[in-house]
Every structure is written in C-alpha cells, then in structure tokens.
Length: 395
Ligand code: FAS
Ligand code: PHB
Image (cartoon, rainbow, N blue to C red):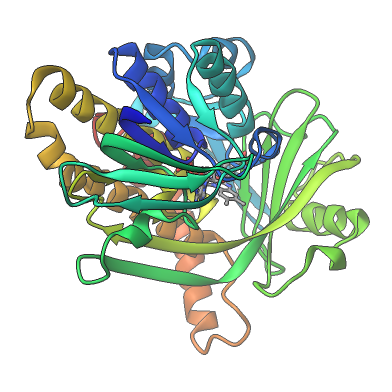
C-alpha cells in the first residue's frame, strides 16, 4: 500500500500527528504493535500545559478535556512541617490542566477512527527501510499474520522509548545523553476523592511523595521507591501508610481508598539527537524521556508533533523544506529545556540514596533550594513558567 506519511506508534504522538495531517488534507497510515484495548488501558501522564491544551483544541480533540478537565492555577511544594503554594497565575499568568493521558488517547482514537483513519493494531516485526532515500518503506506483519508493506513519502517515528524508529538511525549518526536515577516511582490510581485541590509534591526523609488526581472521585498518587522494588512487595496498606507519612502536615489528612491500578516506573533522562534521519522524523518518547516529576513527557510529545505536523504539511502541500530542515534543532531546544526542568525538580524533591557519599550535602542543597523557591518571587516565577510550559512559545 502507499500513503503520504507512515506513522509508527498509536500513542499520543502518533494519534495527534495523524489528526494534524488529516486536518490539512494529508493522508497517513498508523501501525501499532499493541491492541487497541491495551493502548486504551495505559495509565500515564496527568498534567497538560496550556500550550498543549491550545494545540489539542486547535485540532478538535479537546472537547471532553474542556468539559471534564480541571484547571489548576498552582501547586504545593512540601517538606516536613511546611507546605507552600506556588501560584502559577500570579507568577507567570498561566495555568495547567489536569486530565489523564488515558482520556486524551481515548478521545483521539474515537475521533481518528470516526474520520476513517487506517490504524493497524497488534502488528509485529515493524521495520523501517530506506529512510535515507526518497522512497522510505515500513514493513510489518499484521494481526492476521500477513506481511505488509507501506510505501510512503515520509515516516514518523512515534513509537516511544522501546520502539524501532530511533534504532533505525545509524549509531554513527546518533548522540545519546542519559541519566538513570537511583530511584523509581510507584504510582497508584485509587477510587477516592482527592485530599487536595492542587497537586502536592513532598520531600520527606522516607522519600518523595506526590498527590495528583484524575477527577473528583479518582486520585493519582506516587511515591519514591528503590529502582529494584517489585510491586508485589507493596500492599495497599503499605502504600497508603507511606503516602500519609510522607505528606503529613498539621491539620491535613490523606483520604485512602481501593486502588484501581498500581505500577512501578523507572526514572531516566534520555535524549537522542538528531530527531531526523533522511525522511524519518522522531517525535515524543521515541527521541526523549524525562522523569515525570516535571510533568513534561506528554507535553513534549504534543509540542514535537505540532511542530512536525506543521512542517510536513508545509512540505507536502506547499513544497517548502524550511520547517522540515529546522525540525530537529527547533524541537531539541524545547526538549533540553524540559529535560533540565524535569532533572531539577527530580533532584530537588527526591531523597538521595543512603549509599550516596554526598547525601547530607545534597539534602542541604535541596532544602536550601526548596526554601528559596517558596520565598523568592523570582525563583517562583522560574518554576511556574517552566511547569506551565511558558518559557518558549508553543510551535
Ligand atoms: P508512547 O510510548 O505513549 O506511545 C508509543 C506507541 O508506540 C505505543 O502505543 C507503543 O505500543 C507503540 N510501539 C512501540 N514499539 C512499536 C513498534 N515496534 N511498532 C509499532 N508500534 C510500536 N509523562 C508525564 O508527563 N507524566 C507522567 O506521570 C508520566 N507517567 C508515565 C508512566 C509510564 C509507565 C511511562 C512509560 C511514561 C510516563 N509518562 C509520563 C510519559 C508519557 O506520558 C509519554 O511522554 C507519552 O506517552 C509519550 O507519548 P508517545 O511519544 O506517543 O509514546
Ligand atoms: C499525574 O497526574 O499522573 C502526574 C502529575 C504531575 C506529575 C507527574 C504525574 O509531575
């Protein structure tokens, strides 16, 4: 078969790219190696920057977000005995929205399928060929076991960290910069009303804890665990006790409830450059991973795809190479800013491992940083403009 853009991956990046292209009359085909049910059941990000909301709104996939999403004008930072609010609107004039990535993906799948988008679910053996020529191809085995081939003008690698797209770029061309953190996040989704109106990020001697939410009756919470922890070691009681201890503050109580899902996610900063090789373009987690402390992963993916979609439309519809030629460098500017902020938030709020010889020094630096960022207007503004995605204009 033939199409204008072959998209590998049907997560937020691939789905939004197909929507952007379709809105400009550009045809695409998506191949996805998981089932639709598996993709729909994924529980991941929860905070959406105002710029990302604007992109989703512009391309007609934010109706339910506007109905059910929660606008948050600030966030709480906490350490034992003190909880301080950072006011985003007062500091930088912008807010964020809390609306699960799971819901965004569900909304986009419904809209794309209603629009007649061809999505091959449950494929295997995906491979990208001749990306450095004028006739790239994507081959795969479809759900029925038949070998398929897509001839395309361009290929978008939207297949996440474990996908094949990044590996298609020769190692001699790729530069990878990475940090693997000495801790992980244990996350739960719980059927219980949030115990807070805005997110709480807490540093505690037992480790980091965070209170987020999905609705007025579903909460999303995280706690720092050792990277080798297994979820089987964490009963609901043990999780709720740890969360309550780490976020304890006078006059406040954490409500607990039945968990709907729990999992452990490793934490890394990872950037692979360039984000282009010939007619193959990477977007989202296929090119970069951030620790979720800065709530940047999904937002970076949306920014990449807005930029890539605009550039592909400009080339395909108007014959202009300019935006495609700039894609990787321009996208990486936002990637590095978000990578820095995510590393900074993570380093400030997580307990260094007991084995770290600099542990006491690092902890003092973290406490100093927390006190500074909750008292200095300039420091609060820096956190607010990074957290809301307001430092750089959206593409
Ligand atoms: P995705 O990984 O979402 O999607 C890639 C798609 O490609 C997947 O559907 C995959 O099945 C498919 N694929 C992979 N290999 C393929 C192949 N060979 N052929 C075809 N298809 C293939 N971000 C936040 O902001 N906050 C969070 O709290 C947060 N929590 C996270 C928790 C976990 C466990 C993970 C893994 C990520 C989390 N993230 C979080 C980051 C996450 O939200 C990503 O940034 C976001 O999913 C990026 O979207 P995509 O680039 O579409 O990649
Ligand atoms: C979430 O709601 O899942 C969430 C929110 C903020 C983060 C990470 C995750 O920094």
